[in-house]
Image: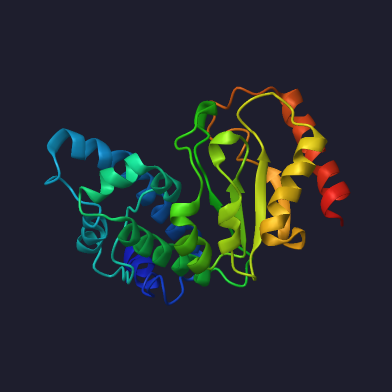
Length: 256
């Protein structure tokens, strides 16, 4: 059996049944690229050629045709970035094309849970990003429209949520987080060099603690200081100051 056949024979288990350790990382990258690809490509194609153009569900079918030895039990790919669905405009865009909120979330969470379950016993965090590239943001509003199905059914151990400015909405959605999950609040912005104050962060943690309990809270930057090599509009000095502030507030407010 040649080398190519050897490699193909290794990728025989379904995603939901458990990806082999040696291909797990590659499988996750492929699935992530599929999600991000359709986040950008599907809306553009739809605007150019109309709703009868390529559909996200065609992705896995094309992969299976190209490689019939690759078994995939999660048959739908390309669900949108979840936080897009908190925006009424984006929800309407997808619903008009036959992809209502619950359908998107159902497919996406099934896919994410398959990857998480295959990676146990690792601890998983789940970041619901609102946009960060080049200091830009994608959507505004609370997590309320997606909080029930995402917080309640995703198998991750930690939920990393962005609450760095007024566009993030209230902490009300935290009341829907199951008892077995920790919430990591992204209270420190990665988009600008403005350094938050310890007093403001402590007050925000107190507000969130009224919804979920301080013993299940952690604190972090809102996202990464650079989503790509282009970076964000933030200085290295501000990045260091923000990280030091996070450590100090975590010790003083949340304890060891």
